[in-house]
Image 1 (cartoon, helix red, strand yellow):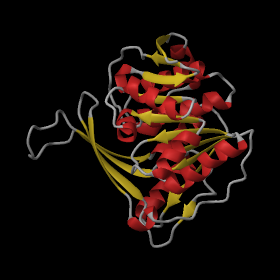
Image 2 (cartoon, helix red, strand yellow):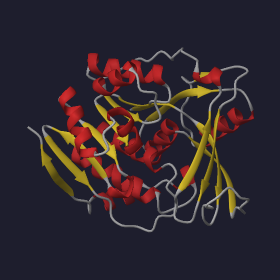
Image 3 (cartoon, one colour):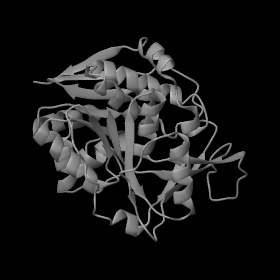
Image 4 (cartoon, helix red, strand yellow):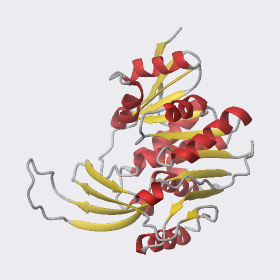
Length: 305
C-alpha cells in the first residue's frame, strides 16, 4: 500500500509552437484542462500499475475543487483522508508548452490553503510506503520524522521549497529523498550535482538522488555515486514526468525491489510519459515500463570515501 501526501492542482495547458523572444500575443494550438499536482500524479501512476494507493491532499470547495473531486473519482482513487477546506480555492496552474516539450509554468495556491497547519491522522505501518512532496511542508515534516523513528519507507519529492531548518530535517530523515535539479541547487548552493550529493553524504550517510531530465538520474548510496541515463526519445510533453518518476519509484520500493531496480523502473516510466500528450490520461502501462526498464544500464561514476 502506498500513501501519497501533498499537492493536487487543476492544470490549464496551452500548446504553442515556440516561445517568443519578447512579450507578444501568441496563438495556442490546443487548450486542455487536467488533473495535476506532484503527489496526485504520483498516486495516479501507482494506480495505473494496479498498485494499492491512496491520495491525501488539501482541497477547497470552489469550481476547481469540484473538478479535482470529479477527476479523482473517475480514476477511482481514494482520497477520503484529504482535508476539505471550506470557503477556499483549490490550487491551479497555467502551463505553456512548446513543440519541443519545454514549458513555462505559473502555479497558484490560496494563502488559506497554504497556511493550513492541520494534517490528517495517519495510522503508520511498516507494511506501507509513504510518498510526500514538499509543497505541504507540515505533512512532509511529520512523515519524515516518522520515517526516522519507525523506520518506515518514505519517498520525498524535494522541490519548490523555502530553505529552512524544517527542509534540512526532512531531507536528512527521509528514507529516499529525491531532488529536482533546481531543488538540489537550492538546498546545497552547489552547481555540480555530483559535488552536491557528496556534500549531502557528509551530513548523513544515506541515500540521496537527483533527477536531471534528459541527462538521467544520479544518486549516492553506500559511498558510491551512480547514474542511470534514459534512452533517447522524441519528447512530446514533459509536464508531469517528475511526478511519474516519484510514483513509479515508490511503487517499486513498495514491491521490495532494490534501489537500482527502482531507479531504472522510475526512469523508464518518466521517459515513456514524455512520449505522449494527455497528462494523467496517457500514463504508461506496467508492461511497457518493465520492458523499457530492462534495457537501461547503471553507470558507477564515483567512489566516495
